[in-house]
Every structure is written in structure tokens, then in C-alpha cells.
Length: 104
Image 1 (tube, rainbow, N blue to C red):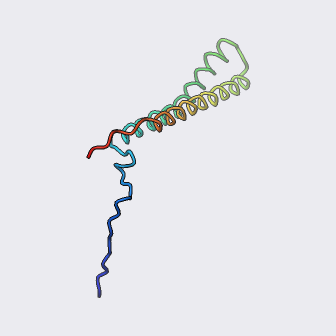
Image 2: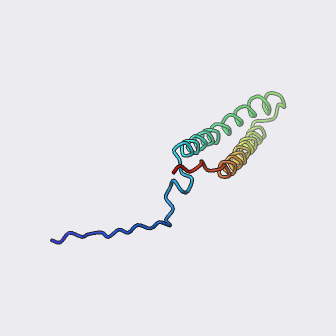
Image 3: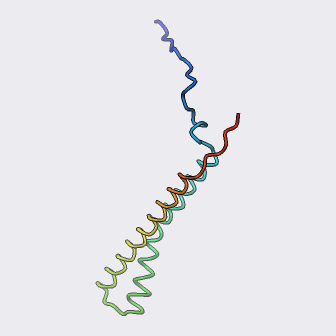
């Protein structure tokens, strides 16, 4: 059997990851941001639903069960949308950060 040889050529105009602004610190920052907002998307609706249903709609306003459940669900949906807006703002700001200076 004949072994296949792969020809490689070097191109000086190809951008490597370091040339594109890649760095481990930036990657870590992106990962932490994603984890933070993932946790917010999970917990904000649960907390806002429980809090608004039991304390605001059932307790303070004294609404019936069906109405308080619907209102609490709306509060949870609004909470998720607020988190998503903040995530989009954070992602936009992170994308606009200047790249670290190149090292030669």
C-alpha cells in the first residue's frame, strides 16, 4: 500500500487565531458571561413567578388562584425578557472591546 503524502504550503496572508484577537483571557470572559446569563435565565423566572404569585398577587392584592397564576406567569416572562435584553447589551459591549495588543 502506498502512503498518501499531504502537501502543505505556507501562506503569509492567512490570519491565525492570535491575529483575530483570540486570547485565553477573552475566551474565559466569554464563558463566564455565558454561564452567568444562563443561570439568570434559569432562576429569574422561577424566583419572579414564586415571589410575585405568593407575595404580591395572592398576599397583597388577594387575587383568586387562576388570576394570580396568570399574572405571575406574565411576571416570569417579563423577567426572562429583561435578562435577555441585558445579555444582548453585554454581548454587544464585549464584542466592541478592543483586542489585546499584538506581541511580536
